[in-house]
Length: 368
Image (cartoon, rainbow, N blue to C red; front, top):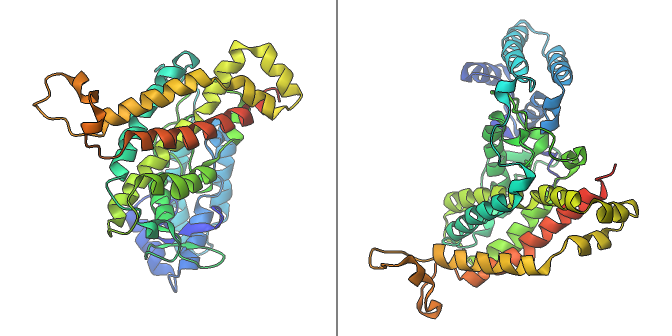
């Protein structure tokens, strides 16, 4: 199913600001079908796509004006349009990144801190995977027409999977509070992001503008469902679709951030060896770039570190352990929530290679 055609009927109210407006819209419809609600959802977000739109205030305002010009000609429609328009204009007025009060004052996206950020992301991913492993695979979560969620494909009418529904719902909330204006965050459904309710931040120019075009979340989602979940979870179904699905959403967002962080890694490597990388980029030599950016010794250390962290985090720590260092002693006698080798293997086979794919894709466009 293409991400652009899958629409959630529960979000059909689009850019309505209050529940009153949503009730008015619902009552004015002659029939509330999945297709009509999907159409409403689609049109209400037209023009509010990827985060880069917030870098152009005039473009943002033009999109809002175009949206208002397409509203219903009925009197009730004009009243809704006027009210919604005023609210959206507030959002547009807030969308200035020129205000120094909304600049990112942290150091988290600076190239000097890339390694520290990657290590912190390891912790989050390991904890998230351990949490997901307590539930069975529950493959109904990932199949269309399996669970009655109010989310459909606008063209075929096929009910979407529960994981798509949950991701779309989460991104509606996260998108409003500027999560996807940050260069290290990537939405799974960027075409459906809502308008902001708080001003976007100015993160400075750390990456080349080609970074905006790179989003491999479709591959990440497929890899997660087909490889990571069955690789660490017990097969079968335990009916915990909601709990497992929430863990899935958390895992997917964390893994997506880690893999797309390859853009920052690539930029740091390019600045460290500009001549070597520039020569390969001009030749569009993807294999050569992959060889140049690969450091097997560093990758081995990452796998060893992830294994140790998974061993430490993946067992119950009680008050009878006087020294935390003893937790890693005699690992064969320990009972883990999930085997550390499994977590490390998933990291080595899937997360790290896809991170390098992002690095190569970024570098190939670095001199554009």
